[in-house]
Length: 330
Image (cartoon, rainbow, N blue to C red; front, side, top):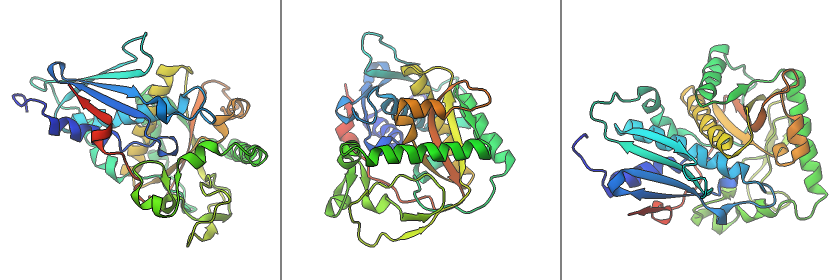
């Protein structure tokens, strides 16, 4: 590998792995530019895929791009490259989120801890299905906490009282949306129904909505809303969902990018441990509710994502944009 140039096929493969990451409503708000002579891969935000109503400060956009950045690091390590990452390398260009120098591997040991997560990139899918009423072993929880910590974040498994509060906050967000006729503007833009679901390259297709919740307490956003979806059905979800809060010390763009990398590291570790996962940011989209989501004991940190983790089906793969649409090689 040391004598091999980074050709177009190699770079395209790395970006394809990066874009398997989750993003809010699967909007995929990223673009890449590879500077061949410098072995430099630049990650940029795509403002056309922002969500001004539900993500006005682009926090979720940065988190999604951070998740893609972590996948890129994993893919590069698996390919024997040495990814050297700089966040927000140009202060005058805030849309340039990261620069990754794909260092020549000669004389460098492979980062096996990153590389071992590579199979989970394609295995990880958001699951909007019920999970089993089964405890997650403490050693697995510790592994997930450590994964977040390695990326500068904190993963907290709330106790029963705090978990109930989080579920109440999600219900509060749902109630507020029901009273606002324009609240689902972003969701409608990024959901794909009927024949469109079969040809979509982005957004959440109807086959990934999961069943409607008949009862149970699992916080699962209903992407269909009041719109009918054929053969969807209803079912009971878990009454004691396993939730986790991902937090960072700060709440600026760099913190959001670190949160995205921590989130993806946790999700890949969970996938490796045969856990299914889903994400909910519903209560975090409203500033007053997001503040209440914090750990009531410490009262510190900024909650960036609520994860639902458990044993169950992983859900179907959702569509991705062709790499040719998001990668420029110069």
